Structures are given as C-alpha cells and as structure tokens.
Amino acid sequence: MKLNANKIAEMLGGVVEGNDKISINKLSKIENGDKQSLSFLGNPKYNNFLYTTNASIILVNKDFELEKPIKSTLIRVDDPNESFSQLLDHFNNKKKKLSGISKNSILSNNVKFSNDLYFGDFSICEKDSEIGKNAKIHSQVYIGENVSIGDNVIIYPGVKIYADTIIGNNCILHAGCIIGSDGFGFNLDKNGNQKKVIHNGNVILEDNVEIGANCTLDRATLGSTILRKGAKLDNLVQVAHNVEIGESTVIAACVGIAGSTTIGKNCMIGGQAGISGHLTIGDRVMIQAKSGVFRNIKSDTSVMGIPAIKYLDYNKSYVHFKNLPSIMKSLNNLFKKSKDA
Image (cartoon, rainbow, N blue to C red; front, side, top):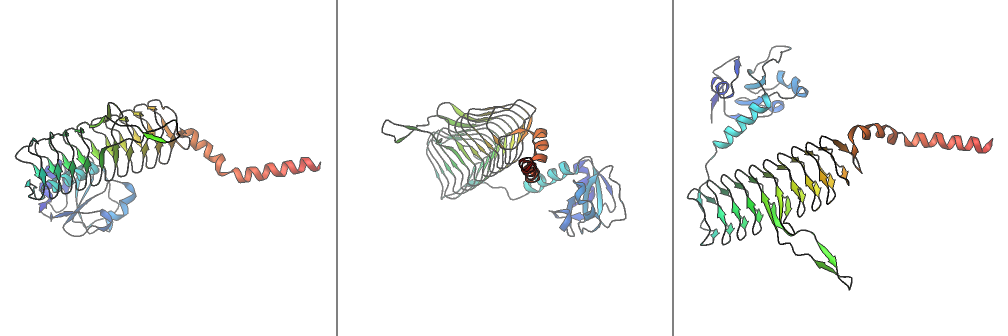
C-alpha cells in the first residue's frame, strides 16, 4: 500500500516540509528506516538518528527545531507518537480481511453468531454460547459452554475460554491466554490432605479490554473475576480468583495478583510486581517493577520495593542500602576502638 506525503499529512492533520510527492509503502523505526518507509521521532533520545536515517518520511513535533539539514521529508504533527499509532492502525486495517467458517472447525448447533463471523481451523465453540458481530476467532481456539462474546472481538490462536465467561465489545485476546480456569484454592481436611475448593463463578471482561499472550485469568469461587472497561494486560500476567481490575488500568508482563484483591482505575503496575490477596489498591496508583505489595494502597500513591513503600521514601532509603557495607565497616571500627580503649 502506497501513501504520499500529502495524503499522510491530510490524514494526520500535519504539515509537509520537503518533497510532498514522495511515497512510502511501509513503516519503520527511525534508527534503521530505509527508502520508501515512514518513521517518527517521539523521544529526544533518538534525535541523532534523524540525521542518519534513510527513511523517506519522518513524523516530528510541530515545534521541533533542526540542528542541520536532513535528507528526509518531514511531516510536522501535534504528537508524533499518537500519529504513528494512527498510521499503524491504518496499515493493519488494510490487511486481508478474514471471513468465513473453516470446515475444520466445530460450532455446536445452537451457538448464535452473525454472518460475518471468522472462525479459523480446528477451533471449537460449545453449546449455548453467543458470538457477536464482526468477531475474528483464529485457529485452535476453544470456547466453552454458555460463553458470551461481544462485537468486534479478536481472539488469536490457542486461546482457551472456559464456560460462562462474558467478553464485552472490542476486546482482544492474544495467543495462548486462558480465561476462566479454576482458582488456586485448597483446604486441609481432618486427615491433613489438601481438598480442592470448587470454583463456581466466572470471568467478565468489559468493553475494550486487551489480554496479552499466555495470561491466565481464574474464575471466581463465587461471583466474578472482573476486568473493567479499557483495562490492558501485558503478556504472562496471572489474575487470581475474584480479583477486580479497574477501568483503564495497565499491567506489565509477569505480574501476579492474588485472590480477592481489588485494583482501582487508571493504575499502572510495573513488570514482575507481586500483589497479595484480599487487598484494596486505590485509583491512579503506580506500582514500580518488581515491587511486593502486602498492604492496601491509597489512591494517587506511587510505591516501590519489597515490601512496597512510598516511592520517594524508597529512593531515600536506597542511599543507605547501597552504603551499608561501608557503614558497617565504620561501625565495626568504632566498636573495636571503644573495646580497645
């Protein structure tokens, strides 16, 4: 697909600076862009690449000032990151449209779906389930009984959706994620054996939720495990039974959230953080990577460390952590002098 600079500027509300007839047919990173590609400068760390890249067109901020001449055509926009995302979406939408139901798939007789359903090879949908309009179900997907899937949902290969799950509109489930598996619950019986706790609840994904590859979301013991609208999970995130994640909260890879914890809206949780069960995390909380959260956190708080404490307190404490060897050496010298005195 070819686009010239004029057309791109029109799409993005930008202004061309240079050859307005030059065309591109792909997108690229600025550090290794080649001819007929478009890139963007969204981070000052990459400014030097602007003068060495071979990309034909580069998106820059409207007030960006050049330090020396360049060979690329510029398109000046309000926000290069947002504009580049818009182009990514445009190129993705121009890809071949998926449609039709594979002969190698199985849809139970009473499954409800629209005529524009795409249902890939070796995928299965069990009885009493419903799939909305313009859904794209890729190969080797399993959908259990009594599952509800909304409109414009994309489910990538290998996803497993257990019975009674509810998925809203415009959700994306990436390859290998598992929605609705049993929670991790056991009770010791009188003989000291671990007896499984049956989980009879379900998982609810509200509209515009995105789940990364190989995530696991456990069904509730009773009631529902819930991801509110706009929540986003990176790859390899574990969400335990009865957890609730608030609107537009984003969670990076390898985070683990224990059962019955509630996380507020617009939170940001860094990679490999661990959150204990039965906690309440407020709105707009920031949890730094690798933190261990064992207590409730109030709204508008940033935390770090194990156990997690306020971010600024952690940074102040770290000055002393890293100096502990020299501090202890000094203390030992003082103890030795006092002993010898």
